[in-house]
Length: 304
Image (tube, rainbow, N blue to C red; front, side, top):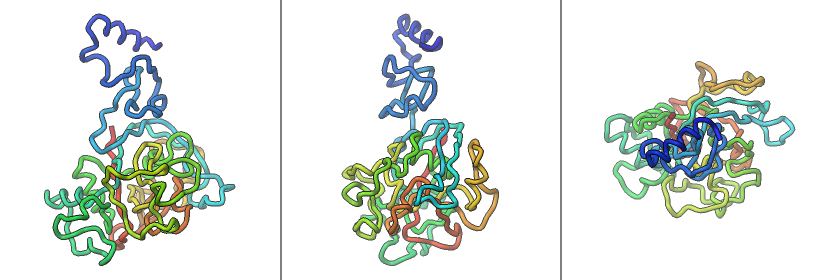
């Protein structure tokens, strides 16, 4: 037991722990870093030597600080050259990431507050775009047809921002190097909770907000849902084929290129027809401010 934990325990005996112990602590769950608490359902942060509730906002899940293996090895047939080589990345800050993708209802709240633009182009297709002029049955669907700046504005309105590629990948794959957000087994499709074209699912987005969604492959390492399939998710970084090669010897809190023509996006979407687009290491890009897609959405993070 650490000296800090001994002191906390002694103070507990004298005062009853009021205002001293972190909330929701399991007595005896000793930790040295957030990584020691990752397997806990709700006690995911290492606070004063014990696993505790990190205090993430409602609708988010915790991703601890620490290192993880990013990218993939050339020996993997599904590994794109842009995600090579497999290397170590250190994230020096904890964060909370939205459990679900940004919803139509959340974007509408941002529009109503005058913080997000409202455009007829948000209906970028007639059949699959999720935005409607007035609130209706689509409020729980992921917001699609988003430009990068619109997605960033919606996250800023909530008090967060878009994740970096490194933050997104750590939240999706965890410390155990998952090939897919749920682990190593290949996608089983709709019944397992994965919405992509190659699985026989309907070619349309699933609700971003739902209490009835189930499936063995629904959750990522961080317990966020739909980090594979449903809609592509914008991240902060400008895209470059060399981003991962530039970190081959390891890097800390990488941000990607300082400028570029395209921005990175991750996770695949309901129109993805290949398993490899659903892997935690697959990298894709899109023109951020001119090209809209009815399978393009976003997810927000809230740094601790």
